[in-house]
Image (cartoon, rainbow, N blue to C red; front, side, top):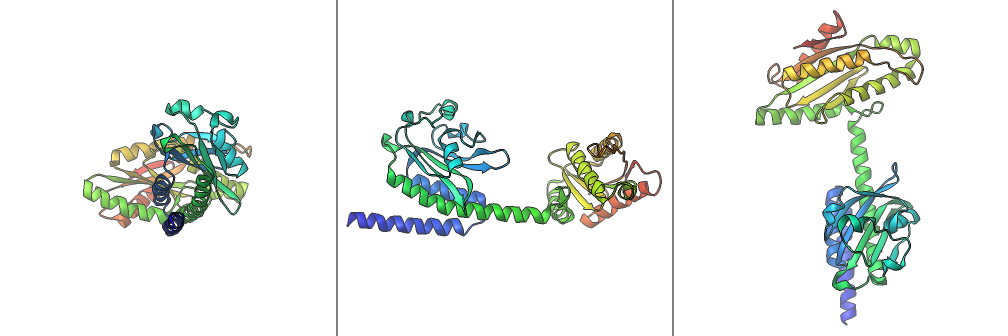
Length: 340
């Protein structure tokens, strides 16, 4: 009777876990549910969830719970390295009652965390044949070894978790695509408007400045006509990278359309924005573009600067004034910076 009651409670728990995990598209929320349930169900001393970075072929510690777990946050290991790396590579669950007897075990993270691993149960996070990462439990409470039942429970939980993580990652990707320019991978004008709405409200509340740099590439059409649209597109990508390399991490770059770019500078007064604008102008003028294509072309930009609330009282006026300032340069000298 006691066994039957235990199984019923287990089924109920998994039903609740399934509902909780599949009802959210927020990765942090999903990971919090996993954290709570693993701690309650399996009671490991230490455990971690590592997500796979396919490009780098690395597993990154996304969650680390337990003694000295804070030392593992942000660390990573190669696919194939240690027990977690083996599980990620092979896509198979693994139960190791005594790690000292398993050649796959690596004590690399024991040295970092000053923790002694004795037993491990590790399962892959897989969905539709694709590996997303692993969940690894280290040392059961009361110094027992993990058993087959722990492996079964964790595998079941991992199945739910993998589906939920995949859904969340796909949702994030779709969201990112709606706000990112396909060509240059900087933000698009849709995101610019959303960001401006948010930042202008913050600027009003906290009484700080928000500056905008509006940039148009001079004679860009000539490059398209001379070298073709593929080279023109490549040049826009190179310009976007150059802008990103010359601004603060807090600043936002958007492709406004065609060969126009906007840089938004939160908490930056007009004089600071002017310095950044001139830095960008010089960087563009001094750079040889399309080197891989053996073209080595040069380029200049016409740039306008405006600031909220010094110049504009709202978002649309800020865009209009920065755009107007840019056109004053474009219609006269080009290769310059004009203030609103």
